[in-house]
Amino acid sequence: AQTVTQSQPEMSVQEAETVTLSCTYDTSENNYYLFWYKQPPSRQMILVIRQEAYKQQNATENRFSVNFQKAAKSFSLKISDSQLGDTAMYFCAFMNPWGFGNEKLTFGTGTRLTIIP
Amino acid sequence: NAGVTQTPKFQVLKTGQSMTLQCAQDMNHEYMSWYRQDPGMGLRLIHYSVGAGITDQGEVPNGYNVSRSTTEDFPLRLLSAAPSQTSVYFCASSYRAGANVLTFGAGSRLTVL
Image 1 (cartoon, each protein chain N blue to C red):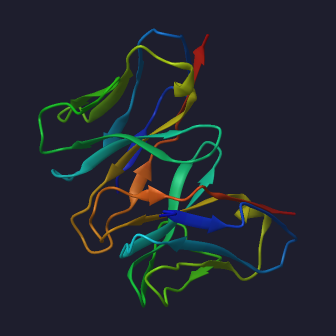
Image 2: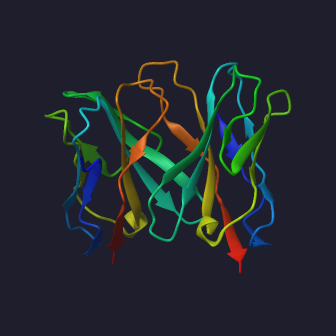
């Protein structure tokens, strides 16, 4: 079974600074997907970024980028030029989509990020 | 295009009562699923469906029933609510089983007294 670990329950950073959220995972699979989801106070789950394990290039979405280290099973999220709207709970998640009905997301416990004005 | 719609948004139940959380999507998605979110535990899969008439158990299925009579709807039933089922419930869908992008509903907060 896969596990996802987020070791930082809470973080805070000044507006406009850069922050990195950590995530490690454990799996015996070779092909899989990794995700970062954002959950603001509205409770909506919002996909921030996605990484396919067979791609060596790190995914980037505007101010959000990942550092994917497959051998180390590490998947950190970097937020550049942080904004007040980035304040949210961030979840790292793993998916192995290669089986019938085997598409469940395995989530970490989350990191609560606060951007300080 | 409403996406994934969950009702109700909030519900308070007494132990032993039954209720149904509704989930509807208008994107013609084949795959639908229910997760629960508890403090300090992330989200965990309860049940899922890969198409109309097909459902299966996820990680934490006990105490919940589901059915999928149409592509659009995937209700989650609590037959006899227990305080341990106090949680926030999310419905999520994707266009097919194996697709790697889920669309989530806004969540339903359930409190069982």
